Image 1 (cartoon, rainbow, N blue to C red):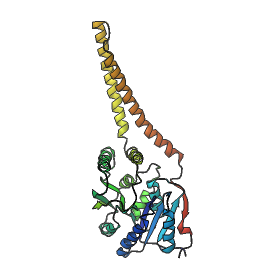
Image 2: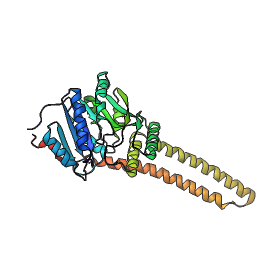
Image 3: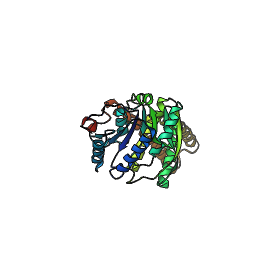
Image 4: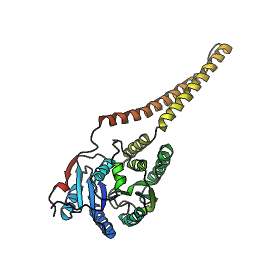
Length: 316
């Protein structure tokens, strides 16, 4: 039997290699959702997992019509999987949460209370981060301070994608078509009343983080280039500074030549070449990042492709 009832609450959960923890996660999500008294659905998106994540989701969907499993054709990344879930969420209240249980589903009740106060977006803001290395905490802190300085849109610090959104906020978000997605920044961009709920982030319930250092760097690059042109302005200012320094050096070289007949000092020449060359390379790299993203956006490929969807299958 195909589920036809439109739920009041949708829980969107991207998954990647989470077979070990998924049964516990689903139990806690069901308990948290049932405590609200609202009709609900859980939209779980398998982002090309290499383990039995899809088997767990497919079985959960067969056992309970409130669970919908969506499997992407390959690993498109967390932000794309989250977008796929949001596009399929039908509720008037939409909770975004990861499958690793670092963000507590039990916070849903408090988030709904804040929504009833008139806020369209209630985001979880981390008061502490258990189970993370000092390097992860330090780089996260540095990232949020950097994006806060660079971005022309105020992006709350120490937040992830864990948040409750109204239907109109999700519909507004889904109008944003970019391929290089930084969802917490995009949600900040759409505006509407937003408020934070502080919580202590737990350690992962099982498994290990899927964000390698390389993925974190790419994610940071998407965030910076998607929400700020200040790096380009830095490149402009650096170019102007180099031009001024080159002019001063030229004047100095002419004066030395007139007074002494030659320009002495190979060390200063080598240092100048290295500094100028390094700054030029940095500027070209910054420009290249923006050009690369323009190239990706111009191709207008789909954000993701779906391999399986349990909503199209008979349910018990």
